[in-house]
Length: 190
Image (spheres, rainbow, N blue to C red):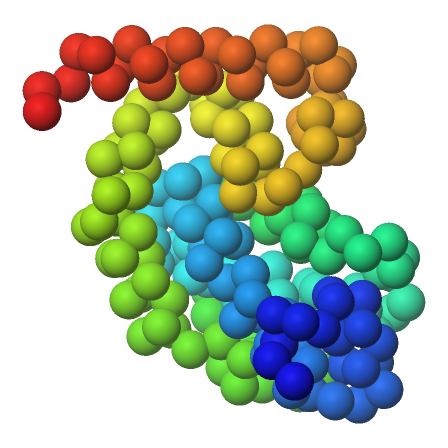
């Protein structure tokens, strides 16, 4: 059975029953979306790779600690973790040391850095590259809502909850983000 057919919650259950491959399938399923979102938040691909790995270490610990509710919303849950870790790094404004997993989980089994670099380059070098650059010019609050909505599949209520604003504010930031992108698309030379 191909991994895109198996629902997220079934892969989570399988992982918790001891199937390490199930986690690898989840990582592969969402790697590009999560990695791109983190890169757009922190502006540093190497730091983004660190945060991506840190995100999935936290995911592993949370899954094993029973902190994931089976609501079929795995990506938004992962994106909230990734966003919070990204904001932590932005506030500290410095790189974290190399991450080691104290429980002996070898995160490199699930995440291959070369693949991440290749996919990140593809996103930036192809048609998304221009949009990536424009999004990076948005004010931080607008950029964050846009990223969480389009890459994290978060609802505006979820975005409001994790960013500490009202739903109307989140909607407003999204509207301004789209308006600003449209203005930039008109003014940027072809």
